Image 1 (cartoon, rainbow, N blue to C red):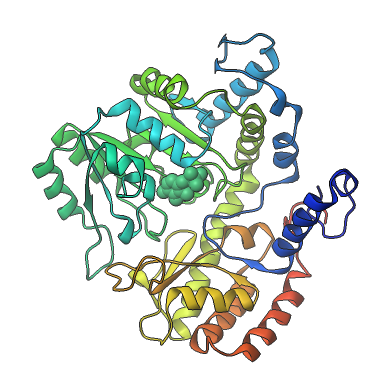
Image 2 (image 1 turned 180 degrees about the horizontal axis):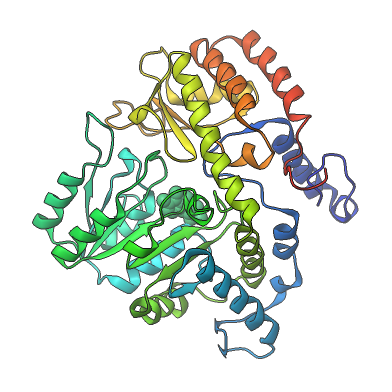
Length: 422
Ligand SMILES: *Cc1c(COP(=O)(O)O)cnc(C)c1O
């Protein structure tokens, strides 16, 4: 399936009904501004590997130790993914079989904890992630979860509170990383506290692993016992997960993932991960990662100039979290109004939010996907102006229609991937 709208494909004749939905998605991705901070556009090579015949293969086990026959090509591609992940992130051991970020975390929990043991993580309401033990998540019911949060004044992680809770609660596992935290994290501080209380330290870099791979921000790898990640966010690979670790955790984590919680690895996605890690090792990816951050910072500054408030005042990463409380609009209504205007973001709780989780007082805006299209600072300033206009007048269909057509003029000039022919 091509990512260029209107290009005929095999699916058109094989299954016109399914093809129509795919075509619609191609159009949507092409004609709108994708600013969901966790999304990106994988390369053609990554998608080709993900669509390859490896989808037909069962390869339960690990390279050289499979339960099935005929695994030589599978061993080759998985070893390639592992070696590239180790080179990219500088870790002793990499497991590349996790189906997703949540599954990667589940495997770490299963490897490190007995049921009922204590986990200390960033609360979801302050930018954490469901899989770190929210009450609706399995981890929240099988383990005892305690949370640290952000300081009310700075809206940065409250390291003193985190250390105090760690000393009181003696967690077996301490987790940092989240999905709506725009600032750098002091990994060394977390490790120090983990050592003091005898905890294992996990960094979940699902959101920012691409920035780490591109050496645009400091790496958690030297400070963490275990690092989990998705591969489809800033890392720009297929929809999947990875786990990186010190040698001492290699056996327990590998066993926890398979046979602990997963069955056969998705070898087509393992292949696509190998391709994505190869891409991330190139100098052009480092350039990309730096531009993602520059774009987020310029976008944030321009939003502030328009009168909007950013949680923590700005960003060091690929996303900004906008606090809408000074305007008469909820996160939900703002995100819906922006969608009408052709700009896709998501509603997001802000720290100390007084609204419900499905309403919220904030929106989260990210630059990874638009940066893949080749957009730079000038486009970010223009887009910030559009976002501010919609948010300040969310009921105006006229504003939304006008901006929608401006968005379409802009997106027509950019393929989904600047580095690939349209
Ligand atoms: C996105 C995310 C995950 C979950 O990834 P899935 O692939 O959707 O399961 C886990 N942790 C964090 C911090 C995330 O942002």
